[in-house]
Length: 260
View 1 (cartoon, rainbow, N blue to C red):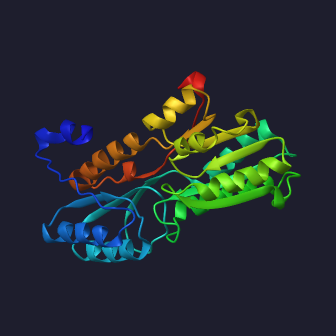
View 2: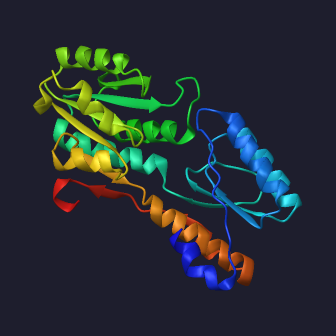
């Protein structure tokens, strides 16, 4: 919104289309609208891999520009990408938790998704990066646990956490997306002094819980900055042929209560 407002005197117009991350058909409907209305460019996220590949093929045929933000995926077709390195951010999460929990503690990787049966590439890479950090430590692979759940049913997460707390004095929890705020609710009856939580993104619920020290670390992907640069970068590509602002890797920002 901000970028387009700054560019409005140049005649830039845009349309906001939304789709449900749990329903592929809504993504297809919106990309169909994009092609039917002959836009110059599209900014979106590469969530459904095969559909995004088809999107890029069609866009290339019609010389339409596509910018993917948030998540990085490998595609053979031309496109631009503004993203954060998921492997590195997972390793950063591991290093932060390890500093608190130590090599003798246990770790729980929590994937809270829209649909447990639809794996997300960036979440898998974050987990891989998290595990890669411990490959150089004395932490045994058996000390790193994993649970996948939907936001509407966190029973499996609570059950798994109770199991781990029975065998460990300290537990580090790595929530691989922006839903860390769901964890404190299921920790109400648990000794939270033994639990350290890290997640992603400065949404309002996460920020509140960070201030209350119920979440301990947040990794920020600067989503507003990504969207702003994507829109400004598209303008430069269309008017000057300059794509330098559209191939960016976002730095990994670490937030705690004190620097929020």
